[in-house]
Amino acid sequence: MENLETIADKRSTVLGAIRAAAKRAGRADLPELVAVSKMQPDDRVQDMLAAGQTIFGENRVQEAQARWGDRFAPRREGLELRLIGPLQSNKAQDATALFDVIESVDREKLVKALLKAAEKTGRLPRLYVQVNTGEEPQKSGILPEDLPDFLSRMKQEYDLTFEGLMCIPPAAEAASPHFWLLRNLARDHGLAKLSMGMSGDYETATELGATSVRVGSALFGARN
Picture: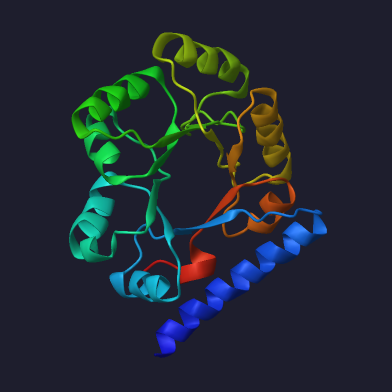
C-alpha cells in the first residue's frame, strides 16, 4: 500500500496546487488534470487509477495500444485518453480508434488522414492544434503566424472546427509568455480549450487560463 499512498498523495498535492493557483487568478473553474502516463510502469498507472484519476495522456500510439488496448483494457471504460505526442499519418486509424482527444494536429496531411480514418472507425476524436509558440525548428506545431490561415483552410476545405490549442514552451525560456500567446490566439479564433502546462509550470498555466494541464513526473515520479 505504500506506493499507492505515495501516488495518491502526489495527486492530492497537485490538485491542491491547481486549486490554489486558480484562486490566485480569481478563477471559479479548474483545469482538468491529465496524468501523463507515457513510459510509466504499469504499477504506477494502476495506483493512479486507484487514486481516482480518469484522464491520461500518452505520447505514442503503439505504447498506448499495448497499455490501454491490451493490459489495461478492462479498465478502459469511463476513462479519457489523450494523445499528446506527435502523430504520424500512417497511425491515424489506430489513433482514432483508441483516443478520445488528439492534441497534436499540426498539418493538413494529418487532418486528411484523421478524417479518412474516422470514416473507417466510426469515431473522430476531439482535436486540438499544436502551436509552436517558440518557433523552434525541431519541434512540431503550427507557427503562430500561420495559425489563422490553417484554421480557416481546415474549416473551408473540411468543415472542421478544432476544440482548442496546445503548446509546449521552449525548455530554456519562461513559460508564461508562451501561455499568454496561446491564450490570446485561442481567444482571437473563438477556441474554448487550452492545453498548456506540465510538471514544472502547471500552476502558471492555471493562472493564465489553461483548461487542461499535462502532468507527469509531479504525479508519478521520475520515469525509469
